[in-house]
Image (cartoon, rainbow, N blue to C red):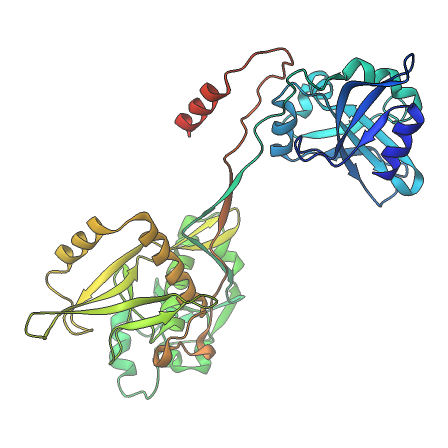
Length: 419
């Protein structure tokens, strides 16, 4: 700002900042040299300084899309000044004129400065007169950018084991493992799958109970060979392995059957968790009683686990629902009726809250008491729910036309309808 002030003063004009009503860094008010008085004609300024010397490399700047919409969607003249104050170097362009002359740069939002023609110095004083407009000429910029964050139901899988172990299997179906493990003490392994007579696992079968269902030497390969393969069958097997790993690490918190996973019941109901950093609590397992006090059914927070990969990032897609049991274990025969009844009453806020709760449970952020999963079996690590930033203010610009009259209300209505 000090460098801009100095150059503008040397021109004989006035530098004013800050000016919150315009939403830019300041403005230049031109001084009539004949009368030595302020003319009330102004040019708005956006300053982008850097502490890194320009050297011999091209001088450029990539604008934010919402900034460009703000500057371009109005009739106020805006210049962008790119500077390195340490060397007292400054370069400038008129934003609207630049993108009129370089339409190919609009998509990339990139401005490239000419070291000779775009130098911001005293000799630019006359060029500013060609841009400036009277302060009281109804000057305005575009709609100020307003951002909202859309929280998705995609939970990033931040890490998974680097290696998949493989060995010939001595069983033909996964259900046969139950008989093999029947007399084995402790926790049975679950993070494994069978495919074409071979066993695949994230853990070395030779070092755990899986050795009982192996029929040969154990080998291994990189998990990435499946996770990022172009072969759909290999990616599908990787998803099966991810689901098995999820079931392994989340016991005894979660139970699964077919395509549904739900929070297990405890001896004391309701099962209520506290949300860290807030005073809120949420009941994730709740009993409903008959008039005589006996248990009618128990409602468990549940979801349908689905793993998907977008742009080489794996996610667990959370679709909240409910599981109903008679006693915390046996399925309730009227589950479909109970589920449809609660779905009719739920609002969007309930759906969002359930996604947040499931994400916290899967990340291990909440105290589940005796249901806490064993950290030694943690195979997958989850991050924060994926968020998407939505621009709810401003409008897209297809053509830059200083003189065009625009019906902003009509344009915004069209945009919303298209969305």
